[in-house]
Length: 313
Image 1 (cartoon, rainbow, N blue to C red):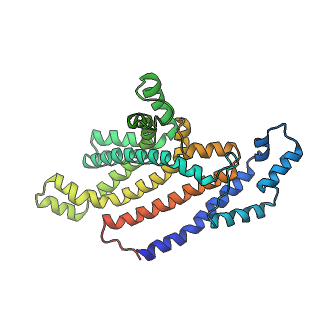
Image 2: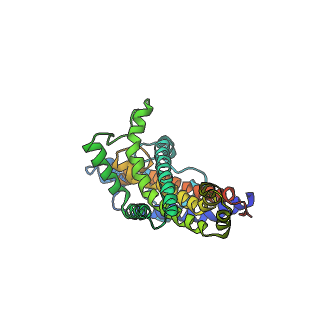
Image 3: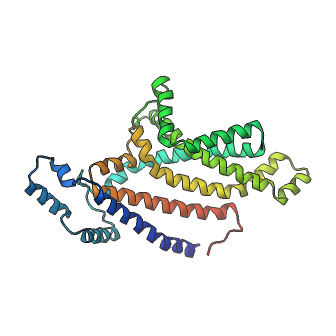
């Protein structure tokens, strides 16, 4: 197991370097000068040049990239141009909001998706199966922001059941949950559709195996067969989808947090891009990349718990 984790860590390094390199280059290709954005359009050329030199932006691009990589290796992603604070202090401050939203979203998606997928598989070709498959198809086709807008219009603006913006009062659990409900459902629906489709396909495949037919021929109750012989082995591909969905939701909160005006890493990333805050953007994307890599590793390790035949080396 330790050897497998070490190998996965080593093979993830090129991916991580590729991500941070791409972000480094893209940010410098975006029109706009951070020095001018900070000082304003009325700033003199001398003051702009002095600030660019202070931020190291007057150096050749290769030298900037080298200094950036040296900082990454040493764990120093720099100081935010906007706040003049270490970039990871902002990441740490806003991470709980994003993590809570992502966990709530994947919980909604997994609960609804697995339930719908199992029911559809057990009632194959029935009206219920057709309805579940249709809803899943629509959910896959609809982007998160469209789902979010529909929820806002229906349940916030028209019915007034949930607040439309913000994260709620930090001292009130119920208020935080009311503010969390619509964003979590918006994220969950997009994941639910994929999870439901995968669950249905996986359960149908397991239902057709010999040992399941043998269990039926022995007269075992259908509920016992489903719970003991079908669900656990059928969850292996589903866990993969859930893990990938959770990693996607962590980065997908960019749209949701912006739409619902929630604090979090998503809004931090958008605001930093607008402000050309290079260090903050690079640090936030690097955190998303590491999160995705770690989640994928945990998903792979979870396979052994679901199927003892799987061995790591």
